[in-house]
Length: 249
Image (cartoon, rainbow, N blue to C red; front, top):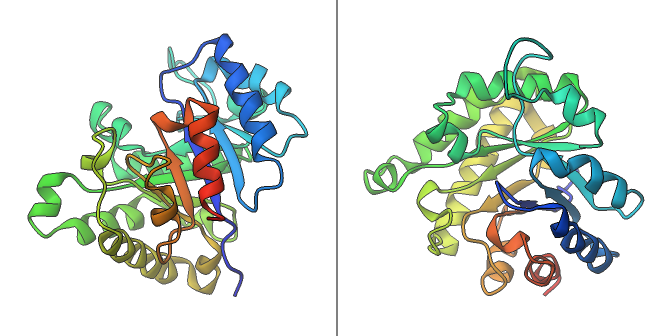
């Protein structure tokens, strides 16, 4: 069975102006030769310029969301085809900030995943539990149900990754213990195997939620962790590169 190729992806969220492209250039320079695939997902308005600037560097550029339709009267939305047209190769879908702030259900996320596949984009599908769900002992059932509901059958044989992001850890400075991370990643791996068979062993399961240089090595070397989805620490090249290099620590 093929082992997952690690993926370290930076989610810039609603941060970054054209002046921030210097950080992306520094990331590309510093990430050369990494055994991981490295990606940056900036705001949509920067994707075209960043993808042109990083062409040939090995660093991939991705989006942060798509609409589930390919085109139409959806003011303010961006389609997967549009992202692909301006150079995106991946897209983050189902992030907790979309699930909570925009009321995205598993069904909506699955439709967006299908749209991404139609456009040739590689999905990074996010799942994770709230603090209340964890304290109630429901973390594993909640997350595995999200995996089942958010990943359409069309993903079989396609490149994709799953990002486990405990909602209570995102931006809080808090992280689960290594044992808790391993337990959740193992549950996700088992659910992927149920759904996609042996091929699921090649799917990277990323950890996200207050990943920073000080804790990256411990997280990235935990069992079943196949990379990281990094928020605030991806905005500065020095911090993000420290996380990328932690894979080899």
